[in-house]
Image (cartoon, helix red, strand yellow):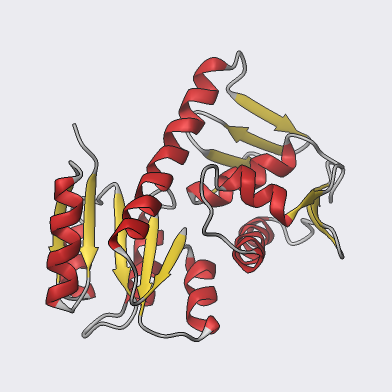
Length: 235
């Protein structure tokens, strides 16, 4: 069965063009003109991927993203924004979005990013299937490579697909420094659209989630001028 994608966009022309392009690629598509209608539908069943406009009536994309993340950390989210300010893009990532596009954008680029997100999930599952070990245990951290779930001292930490892949890239070689470019390559395989700031935003969100569970957590260390590393002996 094909993946189901929800488009939440108040501009009818954009909404219809997106739906047409995604439908032509074989996806099942549902559309909403504002965040409130979408949220009411999502409480019954979440789609496999969301494309959210930021500025919408009744409930904007940022608020909808917050609410969706209370239900699931695993659904990939792409933000659309007509603003050029970096604040909106970074805030969206820190709320749990996996990617963003600034209007106007090319349909080819949007389709490429959708395919990348689905490919990332598929690659992770393939890697787990090909491996003899489905669990990565690093000190108090446990990563389930098949289910994309993380546990810290027996407590589940809800991570998005992107956050999980970046943390996995760090944790599988504890003590080794990963540059932002390396994390972009490992966290976003086959994706040429990400930036250094994108990685920083995801790292910030990962830390925040672990600190909410363990206030002494310091496992993801910044190595200034180089990048990041995972320290196994943290806290």
